[in-house]
Image 1 (cartoon, rainbow, N blue to C red):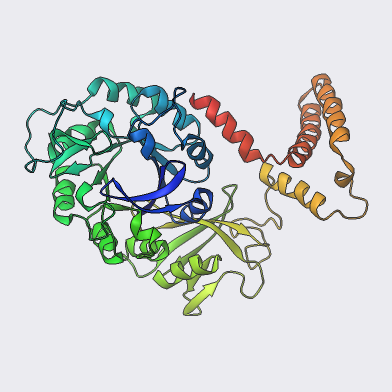
Image 2: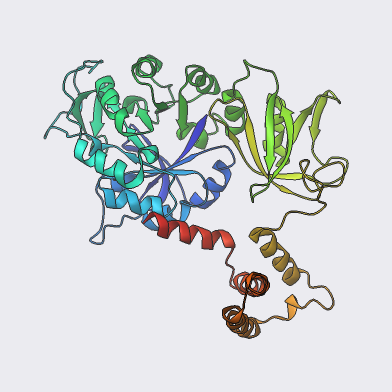
Length: 441
């Protein structure tokens, strides 16, 4: 699959050539991640941190921007992750994975930035084992990506300013024991839009068994598809920002169509409730992204079919995700009414309404304020009154005796809490994210 990259430098989104020359700048990281997250994972890289450009408090010009992006998608973070404390903080703030580069290797002081190809020599690798073991114990091996960027076949470190003297394949083989995937960037190709080093990628794919992501120079849909065929994912930067490739085509091409011309698509609500199952071909996948509404290939109609085109009960797309085998797609959607043709909310239930959830409660309360109906009690609750009711209901809950009373009073308190949260612009996702952050500290 494809991972879109958001590289940050000096507080702006940038794309660099060979890691040095500025090729473009943008000021819309929030808009970018909102778009990129529809298609898959997103890499957010703090280039200033990679170069050690931190202030006295340890921040870079990108720190606040980066933190604001972490819970807006399936985000992996890289750049200057050189200690366990930093990695733990990033995970607690929402990063699904952390990318470790220079800190994984013990670079020889003054090592040159160029030299003969490192090939796949299997000599001793100066791996920073103590750090990697401590990192794995702190955040879990499954959250660790090790960057094996290379210049002339040798591992590059210190923001690509020098090489470690470690041959690429030997370094990758040693490193994969401590991570769930490897990120390979051919530095000479980075930002050049001339294609990546496919021979190097193939040798690396053959040399390691863990998940492998290739970056640096990938510039065409054909190249993305070629990487997918050998079991390598692509991380894209310049090719996306210049429009050379688009993520909808990449997503469709990276699925495994060899098993069947139709791939199952499971639709689920934002709360995780399974709604329906359909099938899609490449055109249906592209149509889903283009329209923002879940579209299938109808086997009975023998044509593209957008769910809701007759009933009006569309499924608004939030994101698509492929499974590990790339032969099934999970679509997270917002239903615009009952999903099943029987009138049920889900094709796997006979219930006519959406199952109760915190998100559903929040949405109902939001609707009461946005479009108050005559006699709506919720719409009468101003900031002061709702706080008074919370105090009242909390006291009643502490006095409740037995399960039935506790349930009743909890329901009352939860309702008024939701009203207060809505008035303050706080969603349950924000609260759950904070609990998650505390758990991971």
